[in-house]
Image (cartoon, rainbow, N blue to C red):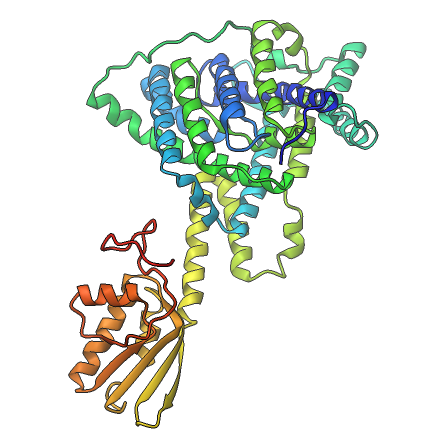
Length: 517
């Protein structure tokens, strides 16, 4: 769906971009600290990754930049080998992501079940909330962090509450300016007018800087360097793609549009390659800032592009003004993001959905908070797949009848695959069955090589018993593979509607295109 660029739309997109840029500053600085790099390394990543993905990504309206999920992986590399190795790793990470896009691996995000998506959303909302709690702490003389106390804590909580209240009211009554931007401006004006002793963005670090300069990472170009950076690059690429693709799906669902998953992979990769050569820490999609953009009305590439350019403007020209924004205002904005991101409906449906799905939802949320997003999604998908395989393995059954010729007919139903071969074998009794047996696969499907092996083993059992076994409605693909393996199976010429068995990317094991999949 194409959004028309009317003057009102352009204004909305630009204001949304400004709001996102303001929220990007403390996040990029904080994540740079997590990764043990200079704040400008995080800000440059937010600008470059944000701009490239805004222009070429698979989902207009998504915001990308430096993220905590990547920063926690980078910190060990930086501490042990230095920031130049990080830049080299980011370049390699980008190359891996580009190849993932070219290979169209983004389509496999459809394998993520909905309970995993809900768990991802809820877990990430909790992570965003916990990340904001760091703003309620202050470093002591020895560098240790401790919670704010007394009037400082009350002031922080009060300003956060004011920001959230203004956002709610502005969202209800002001339609011509993004509500989060109104909240930031109102709280900043309040603190400035009353000269309140509130912590500001400048208290984190100065964001003033120049344009990022091109430079090749200063690392030895040898096998030893590759062995150091390759494991980190693979992990960072996987985390970045998973977070980006899940965010893409979430934004597409909210806006009722469709995004290009593989295009997003390639765009993320290109962005990280450029970032690595310009002194950035790399990045991926940011669900918090993406939600701010969507809620502020951003629907096109203009808003995300404007956010990146505004951020660059802050670095070059507006650092003094931006550093005066109270941290409480930005925390209030992120708290509103948490409230809108968390799938509150999951509490309502927990007792209505299968217990396995409810467990996956809770599991993914917990692992996201305790470990990281990539592990959480992988764990959730594996558990959901095992549950599905277990349920599917119990669905295979057979109805039996004796025809006029005295032959026993097994009419199968359900899928035959690695999980159901034991149940399949238990359906037959070669010792007591009559001399002629027919197995009818009209209501069944052979899904993998384990299923073919189970058929072959069944034929051998009847052969040893001296009985005749014939298969009906096996697909041509099945019969061809069984014949190639030298199977004893006798298959009738009556074929099922064509479907591929043990198919990989549209090709069977013998590299012949199946007639129908």
